[in-house]
Image 1 (cartoon, rainbow, N blue to C red):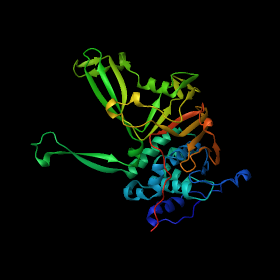
Image 2 (tube, rainbow, N blue to C red):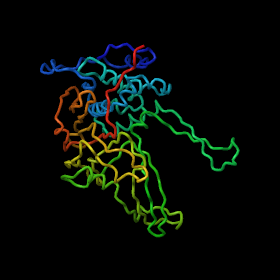
Image 3 (cartoon, rainbow, N blue to C red):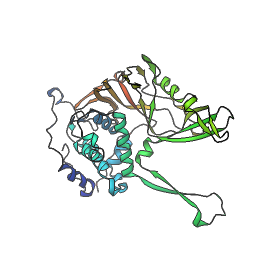
Image 4 (tube, rainbow, N blue to C red):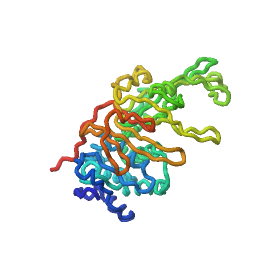
Length: 373
């Protein structure tokens, strides 16, 4: 392990169990030119375990989300752990601790992969996986391991006996507090003009790319949030007309998350044809304005700043993932290519290989570890 720090046995007991099932790994290769470079917190490479660049890129991006890192470094997660599904969250805590508090230039995420691979064996295979799908699996498993139920009463009538009043449970976790948003779809019947609404929770928004050559992130957002008309086989049943009717549908953000993740849909499948869109998408590093896409009632968040990027190089059948992340300690951008880490200028963060964009509406402070007694 990169870090020899001591932790309470209960914190990482599952780590020692998992460690018995994993192979011993070689130390990360050290580049002589990098030996004398200072090692900053959160600027740590990750060993490739065999086509696991997709996992490394996602872990680096999550490692740059300071509120998430602090939640694990401070030990707050321990009180929320669900005993029947704590392996992934505990392994994630260990990786974050090694990346932030360890003294090595790179560490191995083998323990985390083993914990997630016990649930999803596909991640144990040495085959390339989609980084966006992997991110969703990770966020879902962390939420399941750390969720708490918050009960609120729902009164249909004040005269209803107390024993008959409905209790509604809301699941909350560090994941929902940071990443969960909500889309509201307005659905208008084009015959009777009746309007209904449907809500959908999201942690990642997949954006269409409207051009093959060049466009902006705002172009992608406008394409996603523009009104769409559903006709023919896509018609929706109207409760007033009591038949399927042509319908106009428009989406808006009714709950904006603190950290919003955009998935650029570069992998296009038309029938049997597969291709990757290599469109150069221009995205801002600061002051992304989502106001036009948020319901007027809920426009309370400031503008968003970019904090991490996942890049994909290659085609659909193969390729390589890297990450660009802004470090909250140095306030500098770094390129993470498995074990290779280097500082990059702001001008290099804009790339035609961008696949996932992480934006935050709050400035990140330096994560704090648990205070010693």
